[in-house]
Length: 340
Image 1 (cartoon, rainbow, N blue to C red):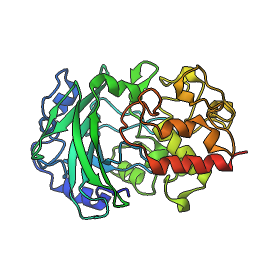
Image 2 (tube, rainbow, N blue to C red; image 1 turned 180 degrees about the vertical axis):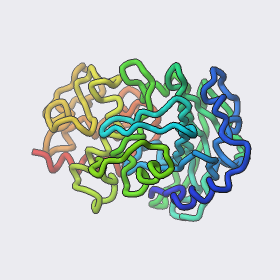
Image 3 (cartoon, rainbow, N blue to C red; image 1 turned 90 degrees about the horizontal axis):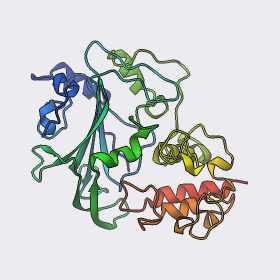
Image 4 (spheres, rainbow, N blue to C red; image 1 turned 90 degrees about the vertical axis):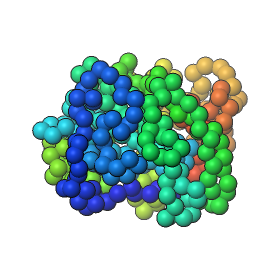
């Protein structure tokens, strides 16, 4: 179950009455590392639930899986500037931009009204020198989040949508680990703010109206919602899932480019997508299976094998996962059954 954090109409109403102080642009652009999330004034309340002026809540059509955590995403673009639209890549976001993403869990996913207990908030800052990643961990009382550049672990426990109790040690990444996903040719970049991820019929239009995005073509691309069959074919939903969960690393410019396994949205359906692709190097990661994807046979494919492993030497993705995404494994397995 994915919860939409806030409607755009509510966001507009909050912005119209947003209190002073405003977002601290000097802190975003400066060279310091603010010790508290509240130092930035991204939110009009201590619990990070009411976005300040020029801070827009957004969702992704198909989000990255992070141990079943629910996420609240926000984008700040400085007044007088706009993101430059791009069809296929991350929008060109101006200096002074901040991307804010909070992670948390309700006590019981079956209760839509259950409050979300925030665990961490990750902040990406666009400075003149490039992007900077800062992880903030929330106090037990939810009053503020404190900078933890070295990362940490937080015990979490909740009841999932199927009524099963889950408990594990949630890993907050350190600043260097952020590069594991956000690295692109040696540069730190955002992953989510792309037209195909944000295009849901309202969000991009709202960004243009708020003068946060310079334009919006009528034929802007869109990926489906991975777990909604009404939004697209199983092929498109599986490709969307692989794109957001794996494609930032497994692409020609990503950290896993030497693997020859490229899982981004625009990769043709060939050996580099995994069809009939043998392991690049010997090791436990293949599970003694011959192909990343054996068309028609998920049980003979090491792609789903690695997705359902928790062994650090086998598990994929390598970072940000302490639990198996059973529903994601099921989707990819069903997709592989359709391949020939």
